[in-house]
Image 1 (cartoon, rainbow, N blue to C red):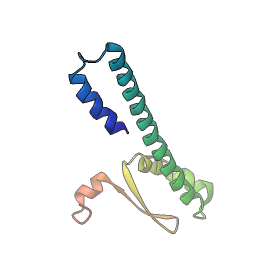
Image 2 (cartoon, rainbow, N blue to C red; image 1 turned 120 degrees about the vertical axis):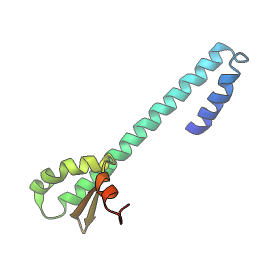
Image 3 (cartoon, rainbow, N blue to C red; image 1 turned 90 degrees about the vertical axis):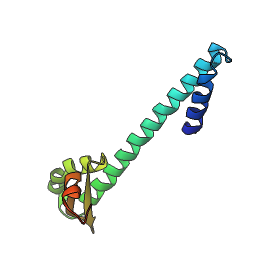
Length: 107
């Protein structure tokens, strides 16, 4: 839906003289609202991923200490800044982007 409005906005933007200023502004406001909704959706997806990772840590048998120890890593993982590799709820390895660039296999 957002892409359709962006396309329409670009096409109509060139022909803005044909549109009344009121119609053009309405389309522009609608596009801005859709962009805000898309940003909110992205943030909600990141938070959901963080919650899933936190539940994995909490069920690994390590208790609250484990959660506090790995929580900064999970926040970074949810933001896409590093990758947490886990198996059976236990974190086995943490890969940062710099690891990927230095490791020829990961690259």
